[in-house]
Length: 269
Image 1 (cartoon, one colour):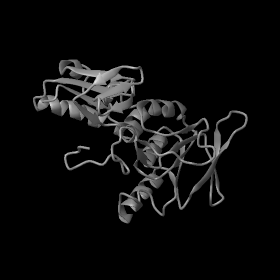
Image 2 (cartoon, rainbow, N blue to C red; image 1 turned 120 degrees about the vertical axis):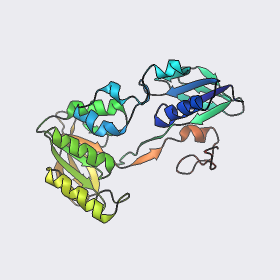
Image 3 (cartoon, rainbow, N blue to C red; image 1 turned 135 degrees about the vertical axis):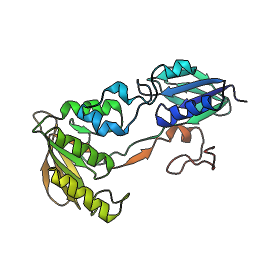
């Protein structure tokens, strides 16, 4: 019987793990380590109702705040596991705290894939993954502003629709021949393209981004240049080109990884 289970991660998988463990009768110690200062929250609304200002932050929580003390869960918020010692069976946090464990759950999730082009780090260029990301984007979404979205997937199209509701001019650039090409059939792609166009979103497919140009006076992004030679003016840019597994902790601990952590059918390394 395990005495102490540590969960590295503070998202949906982490809270589901501690909830299920308690529901199934686990009475030992539970420690959850999340690198954000918030209790586990829903991410899907970040690009929709929360970004639009129609949903309060408290309503994003997957479980209410009292759930954690009531179920004797130690939540280490704003902290990150920096090292795993499998032989010694402990993890070290970024504040130096060492947590021993009998079992370790890796629930580190993924992070936005970076766009490797010149200017992608300019002010006004954003990725959307966290609550803090959504807050930063919302602060720059002003009626009449020009928003350019790089990537025609779920995140990109959802942000595009929300920005239009906020009164922005919106353009979506997609390098493939249609939006959502990895996850939907051509008929569904055409439906989403038509719905967005009907609401005033300009979608440009077969467009590969070459660089983001800077406004020298402000230091902010001013335009996006594509390989096809078109320059699209922009006040705000959202990059949504997929995710990469956050598996560096597992790799450093010697766990086999291949585009994520390799496990058996029971999710064990």
